[in-house]
Image (cartoon, rainbow, N blue to C red; front, side):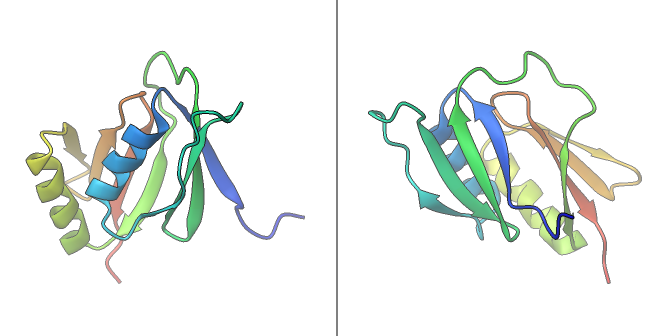
Length: 118
């Protein structure tokens, strides 16, 4: 039986650009492996929240749907990320009495910052 998540793969049009977006929003995120344009399977590997995200070059989802990746954060972390998004002119929506912040990358992948103070 599975013990934990190994990684999350997201198909994106520009892996390096998406990696920059995520490292700008989440300062603890770090690029583990850069994109190699000569590789038949170009990707960027990013570590975030203890998981590896494989950002693989391709055509992402055509539209947003209910699928999303949710991160547990404190209220202060959520507000800090919102300030960084404001500085990046990145759209986001607050929901559930401001305990959830939703934003998407350039390829319609949706992320949630859920406040779970504790």
